[in-house]
Length: 412
Image (cartoon, helix red, strand yellow):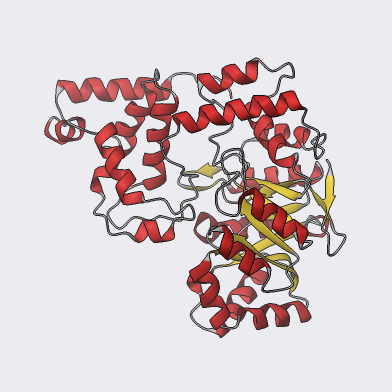
């Protein structure tokens, strides 16, 4: 495991951080035993930075991490968690939330404490409510060791926040496809120039840059003289930037965890060759040409008042266009979202209330995009399914879906 240093403190952090936003699932919740095994295995392999938040897994992520760090593991790691600005109505809420987090995480201090998902409006709100005084007092009391923020706004707001306080670190979305989105490379270098440590979230764009990538992209990677998985290519692109301190990966599969740990053992900054960078530039162009929606699957838009599974619909919509010869995404959409196998959660249920759009860190025009999903993925199918719920067509469709779900899948 390689480590990089926090400029203002000298703290040495593993370049691979464990993101606790996508822990392994079981029966609609977290598979707690498996999650704890994964977390402890990562620690035993050298990972020492773990990122969670009250919003992750509807409040369960902090609980699981706290339990995983019993038996001497807490002393081996740095915990990062966040203040949810949407839960703050007055100054006292900040202290109350932090006190609860310390109890949930079973610790007397948070190593890296972030103001969660800031943009211009949320930052101004927290300022009015006295968040800087809160941070100063919490640090003086030893409840917080390092103060920072995560960010999903524009570059102008990012620079304003960086300059407003003596932060030790910040967290931005940064990956092969988001080089010029949100804070972007300009923001990365700006914060590094102020001696802030840079934690990177969404390095694999919610998994879109890893695993089973489109054939056009895989062909490009196959042409490279050095053979790497799509995930390794994407992670190395981020780690190649010397400004980056930690790259967070929302790991929930043992094989993926081990692969990322192996990669983190050799991903030195500025180690990609000119040929490597050319390969990645071509892969980026292919991804951007095929992808329809820039959704990372973070889930901030949920729950939808109308019952739409927004991230799920977008994921299958993207998959349909990333893999045009695969009928699977259309079958999955009908099965998962169309009411054949589960309660309907399809894009056509959207009533354009706008709640999701206000919550989206990517600032996606979600209601408009859901209209596109409806047009492309539903059509007459969604009208026929309820009418022919017991008919031959429906039986054949269900048979096809079940066949798709039960077939053996190749490993990524």
